[in-house]
Structures are given as C-alpha cells and as structure tokens.
Amino acid sequence: MVNLQNLNSALDSLSVSKDDMAVELSVMPSINTFIKQSKSEIERIMEQPANIHNQNNLEDLRALIGNLETVKNNILNGRNKQASLLLNQAIKKAEKIRI
Image 1: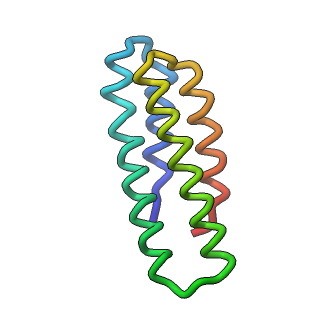
Image 2: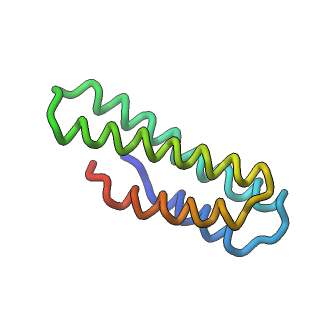
C-alpha cells in the first residue's frame, strides 16, 4: 500500500527550504520511498487476476512514478519551484488512485 505521507512531507520540505542541498537531502528520501512503495504495489497488482480496476491502477501508478522522476530531476537541477508545482500535481493524482 502506498503512503501519501511521504509525498506530503516532501512537498512541505520543498516549500520551506531555499538551500538546494538541504532540499535534496530532505526531499529525495521521501520521494524515493514513495516510488519504491508504488513499484511494490505494481508488483502486487500484477499478481492478481486482471480486471479493469487493476489495469487502471497500474497505468496510474506508472504515470505517477514518471512524474516523480521528473520532480527528482528538477530538484537535482535546482528547479525547486517547478519541482514543487509538479509534486503538488503528483499528490493530487496519487489521491485519486484507488488501491
């Protein structure tokens, strides 16, 4: 089961800090944890019988992981404002995924 607390804490850290290194150290572990949880959830779903609900969740989780990888790249390149906007969008999408 994925936990949105990791993404919310990453967004809080991203919003507060102005130091790029501090952002990287405080935000990346939360995003990486969420990505790892999402990948585990994808594996769990793939072991279940196929149905439209599971297929939609797989597609949504894969898209969310892609969005979070973009957030990470923005952080690594010092584009924290863009990362914050994308992370906020990712959280909204994650809230809509029914697992």
